[in-house]
Amino acid sequence: MRLPKWISSFSLAGILVVSLCLPAFATPAQEARATLEASINQVLQELNKPGLHQVEEQKAILQRIESVIRGIFDFEELSARTVGPGWKKFTPDQKARFVDEFSDLLRETYLEKLNGYNGETVVYKGEQTSTAGDKVEVLTSVNIKGKDVPVSYRIIKKDGWVVYDMVIEGISMVQNYRSQFQDLLLKGDVEALIRQVGAKAQETRAYNKKQQITL
Image 1 (cartoon, helix red, strand yellow):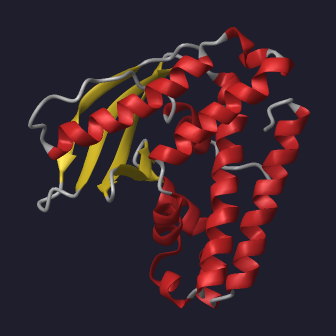
Image 2 (cartoon, rainbow, N blue to C red):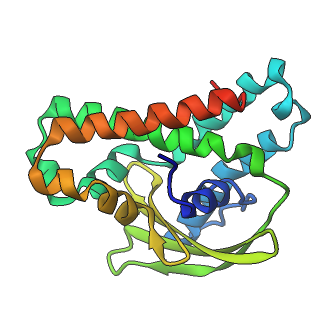
Image 3 (cartoon, rainbow, N blue to C red):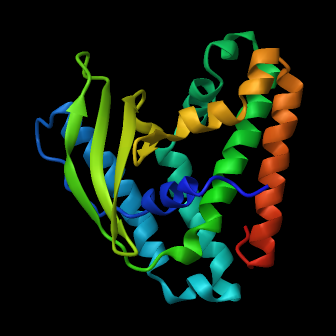
């Protein structure tokens, strides 16, 4: 089963940002945006290397990209918000296994879209900060094949600023996945949910291998 079409935009848009220097006495919005841009700019630099499409160099490049992505995306936060209120019913072991499978699914989905990069750019539209100053939503627009696609990055302050959701054309990544898992979430069948996420990750991985996009 192929993943929803909008995830293609999510995966591609998530790598298309340029760096921004963090000013002194920065506001939460400036801090969050600078953290996002600095991390994603590292990915952009890797994508622009000619070795990306050469088998002998691709693996090292993709490993560096994955390292950056794992540093900016909080997969545990993504997992908890995707599951919703039922997350507190998971055992510590189930939480760990779900995070592993879900992050693997997002990783494989991301890798699937790398070959689609064609020098697209991002235009920043502004930032919105929560009253407490611990959450920031960075508003952008990505031009993909002549179409401007609105993309918002939802970022939270923990030890540092990390992404906990993305909104593509008004569709939240977290809410989209939660709707996919809704039946199992309502049944409270945690083990079946973990298996389903793992199966989706394996399916995407198999596709990537055919396309020679692997780690």
